[in-house]
Image (tube, rainbow, N blue to C red):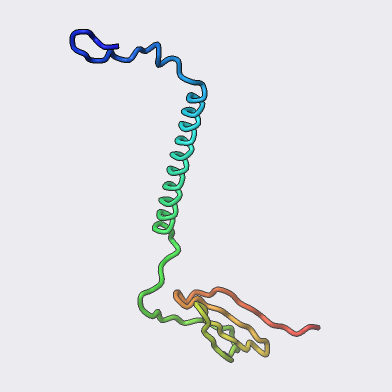
Length: 123
């Protein structure tokens, strides 16, 4: 429809827009639902990444010393050091404690004890 004086087209009729195909409405609803899922997934991913970063920054496990640390380890009375070994991030010390063999392991970075392994003969 054109106006006789100016030749311009008439504005669209709202009644014609109301007659939208139901298939188009289902498509639009599906696209909105996919956008909501996509947005929620993105927010979840950002929260997870920030959580990991915050955990790594704020955990109180301590950091490795930047220079060697002097430490004295106390051994049981009568114990003798038989052997030592370094592997990966652990130091293993083999002890002879009054005729019984014992292995103690230490963390190489902090020099904290990480475990003890005792050996005994079967009765």
